[in-house]
Length: 336
Image (cartoon, rainbow, N blue to C red; front, side, top):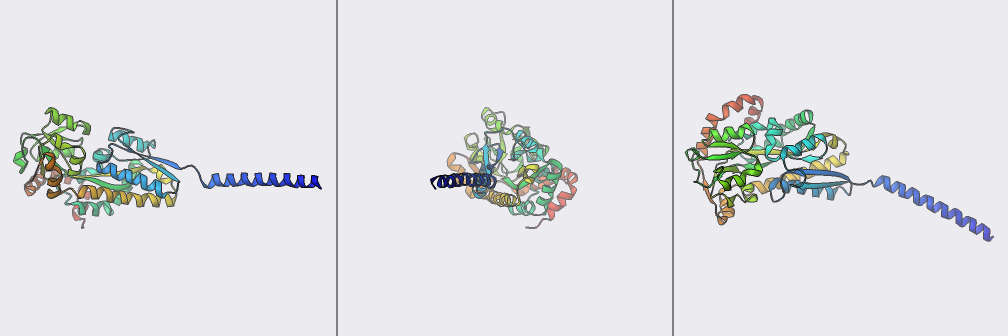
C-alpha cells in the first residue's frame, strides 16, 4: 500500500511539473517581451516638439499594457535632422521628425513656408488634419516609406536682432539674418529686405554672440526655449513664415503593428499634436510675448504685417505659386 501511495505521489508530481511547464509556455506566448520603438529627436524639452514626442512615448508605453516600450531620445541619439530621418527611413530608428528641416526632407512641404500663405493656426490645422494632410501622408508612404503620425508646427516666425526694432520692411535693410537650409527661407528673408545667411540650427546663438549675424527668426515658443533673449534685444511680431513639420514612423514598422496598436498610436499622436499646439499657440501673441520676454530684457514690438504681406505677395509668391500650382489652390481654398 505504501508503495502504491509513493507511485501515485510520483505521478502527481510529474503531472504538476508538466502542467506548470505548459502554463509557463502559454504565459510566455501570451506575454511577449515589449516591442521597443525609439523616437529620435533633435532637441530635448522644453522645446515644444520635444515635449509632444516625449508625451506620445509615455502615453503609448503606459496604455499598451506592456506590449510597446516607446523610448524618447531628445538630443541624445543623433544630432542632425537629416541623420534622424535617414535612420527612420532605413528602419534603424522607428520614429523621428525632421523638425525645422521638413521642407528639405519632404520638398512637398515647402509650399507651406511661403510667407503669409498660411493665414493662421486654424487654417493650418484645417489643412493638415483634413484632406491635404491625408494626401501628404499617402505621398510620404509611397515616396519615402514613412507614415505620418501627426503634423505639428513651430508656430509663426518673428524676426529678432540686437540692432533695432523691425516695424516695416525698410527696417530689415542691411541686416544679416540667419535662415535655415532651404530656398524658401532665403527667398523670404531676401524678398522682405534683409540679407539671408544660411546656417545650421546649432550655430545660430554662437553666431549672434560673435556678430556673424545680426539676428534670425523663430517662433516665440522657441525664442523662450533657446533663451534667445540672452543674445538679442528686440523681437518684432511679423508672423512671416508658418513652420510646419511632422512626426513619422518607418512604414514597415508601422505595418508590423497590430490593429489595436495602430489605433493606440493614432490616438496618442493626436493628443501629442494638441500638446504641441497648446504650447505654441498660447504664447504667440503680443501680450503673452511681452509678459514672458520683456522681464528677461527683450523689447517686443508689433510690426506692420500688412506691409510685409504685400511685399511677400509681390516678391516671393509668384515663384512658389508656379512651382506648386495644385497644392497652392488647395491651400487657398481650404476653409476653417
